[in-house]
Image (cartoon, rainbow, N blue to C red; front, side, top):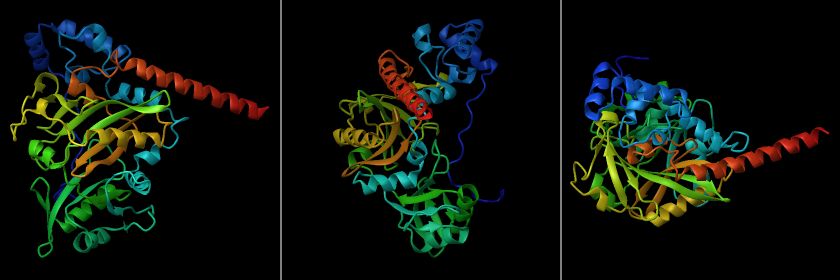
Length: 392
């Protein structure tokens, strides 16, 4: 891969730093927890049910003295997050999860069914076809599309992916100089961008219309899109919103992923859409944010517009595939109402944990998870009984 290329797509987030002696000492001083007790807690969480690593212990702030031992075990890390989601949506039941993760196919389905979503312009793929949708199969084809057909502003992202890796907002194009200006103010040439996309995402990259955000949301966070992550859970045969958090992008960010420096994550009251609290950073750097750092608006006094419509939208979407016990939804609040940006078959519950300071396996959610586990067990037993009867 060329080292001279001006790379502009959002890269892979850095791994959580391994705790160093200074961090251990800092926690001991700030929270009165000796290094020996820290090591003891890390060991109990690593070898116990959560299976948290030492870096996850510090990133989640589990050294906090206001948390009981039981509450600390309610947090999940990367591995236990995946294990939880797999139990809620096992592959023998949720058999079309790969389809839901495909941003082109699933967006097309929602549009066909009349559910509000983004508008696709073109797809990059050297292997798949997408019907009548413009499909770009070479660097040259990407260049020609950007210069002649693309309707700016354009948002680009991989067909499959997480954590905003590979995303970018292409704000405008100067056709004379063939310079593209990005949402964060950076620039690149059409040829460099086409080469980067095809080198990294030749098997799937989508161009879609950039979303215009509701004016009330813009007044708080600016024009960068801050989606709401809804997580829905099947309960007694119908999808229910388990929690919602608002991903507030940093002022100079092109996407709202919370790992980007300066981004905020806010807990939202599910019943009303009002912000309950907002936080920035993790671990020892975590801080409660009362007002937005640019607009100076008090976040806890803000209620997201079109909230009831957003609740209805995500429940309708989950209702299409009730086999999935849990699903996550990134929803943009546009002037005319909510739009589905994408579906996540394995929601990243760290967002909830960072926003609230609570573990996802808390006493409120655990009984709801248990209902899904019981449903899945019953379905699995029925499948086994049916398979056994067919062999007779």
